[in-house]
Length: 262
Image 1 (cartoon, rainbow, N blue to C red):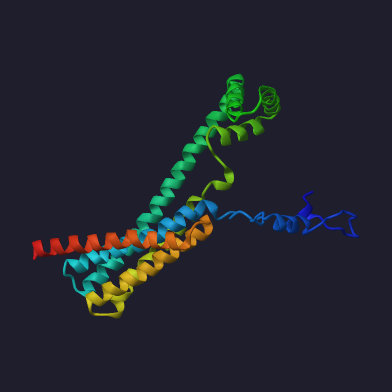
Image 2: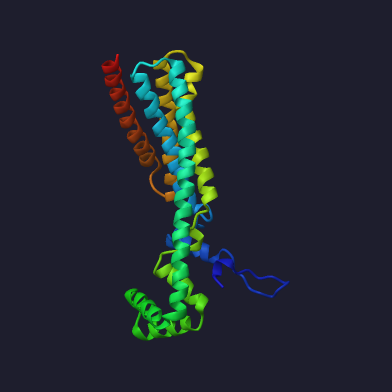
C-alpha cells in the first residue's frame, strides 16, 4: 500500500505510515494529491450551458426589445415568456439529445455483443490492433488479448472504451441533464427579467440587467475556472466580453428595427 495511507494499528496489525509521503513530496516541491471532481463531472456541460444560455440569451432579448422602443410592461412580458419558453426548450432538447445518444450507444453495444459471439476472431484482431496502436510490445499485446478472450464481459467492456469511447462514469442521465438545463436556464434568465419588475424606466432596467448579468457571467466563468483549474479572472472576463458584445449588437439591431417599423 502507498506510504501516505499506511499507519500502524493494534487492531489489525497492519502498518500505515500516513504523512511520510506527503512530507517528502512537500520537501521535493511535488504538488499535493487532489481528488477528481467525481460524479458531477459529466454534468458540467449542462451546468455551464444552462446558466450561460439563460444569462446571455435573456440579456440579448431584453436589450433588443428595449432598443425597439417597448415599455417596461412589454419588456417584462417578453422576458418572462422568453425565459419560460427557453427553459422548456432547453430541458426538452437536453433530454431528447441525451436519450437519443444513449439509444444509439445501446444499439451499438447490442451489435458488438453479436460480433463477439459470432465474429470473435475479427473482434480479437481489432482489440489487438488497438492495443498495438498504444505502443505496447507484440508479446504483451498477445497476452492481453488472450486474457480478454477468456471473458465475454471483459472483452465487451474493453471494446466499449477503446472502440466506442464509452466510459460508464461519464454517461449522463437524460432526466438529470433535462432538470439541470431547464432550471439553470431559468436561474440565469432572472438577472435580466427581475430589474423590469422593480422599475418603470426601461433604460434603468436595461442598465441593471446588464450589470447583474455581467456579475453572473463573471461568477459562472470563475466557477468553471476553479473546476478546470485555469485562470478565474480570464474565464470570468471572457464570459462577460462575449455577452457584452452580443448585448450591444442586439440593442443596435432592435433600434434599427424599431426605427424602421415606427
